[in-house]
Amino acid sequence: MEEFLQNYGFLLVTLVQQSLLAMSLYFPLSAGQLSLASPGFYALGGYVAAIMATADYFAPWRDALGWAIFPLEWLIAGLVSALLAFLVGVPALRLRGIYLALATIAFVEILRVVCLNLAITGGAIGIFGIPQLFESRWGYIWIFGPLLVITLIFSYRLDRSRVGRAFKAIREDELAAGAMGINPTHYKVLSFVIGAVLAGIVGAMSAPFLNTWNARQGTFDASISYLAYVLIGGGRSLWGPMLGAVLLASLPELLRPLKDARLIINGMVLVIASIYLPFGIAGALQRLKLSTLKRYASLRGGR
Image 1 (tube, rainbow, N blue to C red):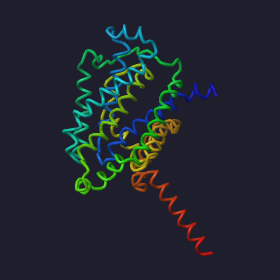
Image 2: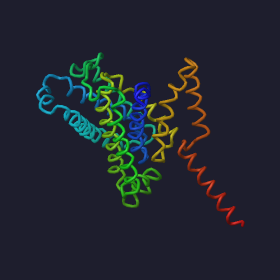
Image 3: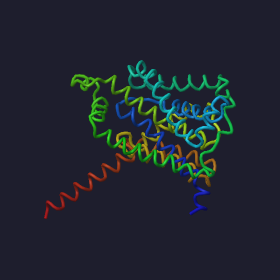
Image 4: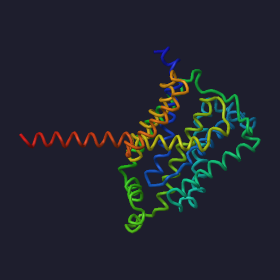
């Protein structure tokens, strides 16, 4: 077991991490918002943790709190992400569809350029030598794993709450939801903030995991990757984003023996899944389940 964790621990933690980032995109999508801002908040959370862990003016805090500085970093990263998400979300979420996607991509790029030109973020070089929380990389499963479980429980409860029903109503028809007394702007901003807080906390946890942080952590490419996780896994299912993240994040590693050909196969998987799985993997599994139940019911009725 120890040897397995040493060899594949980094991959396992990465799969859980990517699942969490896919979930951060799931929340605004559940309210019908095509937001691609998660990489920006992920990068922001990582910078918060990296600066607090390495800057000299935070040294008294680190000496006084010891290991407890790490949960404080996660908390502050979540709060900063929530504040920025609110400031960005109120004007941006007046847009819809592709226009909202373009606005959030612009936000990610603006944040990346700002970080490239600030001394506190290390500029283009970034921040190195971030203190580790665990001696081995696989040890980080003990913080990413519980966060994923908490996120899934929270998502499950949210989907069945009044807020979750409002999200679904806005996703299906925003005008009809507004006519029923639902405030679309309020709930759209709320879903955006929830996703941003999750991405920010994951970023704060990832900074010591990666041991370095720079502007390449939040890019347009990352936005497309997270969106692919949700679309391939299934954007209308709680388990869909996680399934998509596990599949697409592990596929390059599984195809590594094929060398450069793995990139072609990876692209083919995306294309085929987009064509033949319009509702994602979770949607296909749900339809298969319903089809099986109908067939079973018809067989029992024919007896």
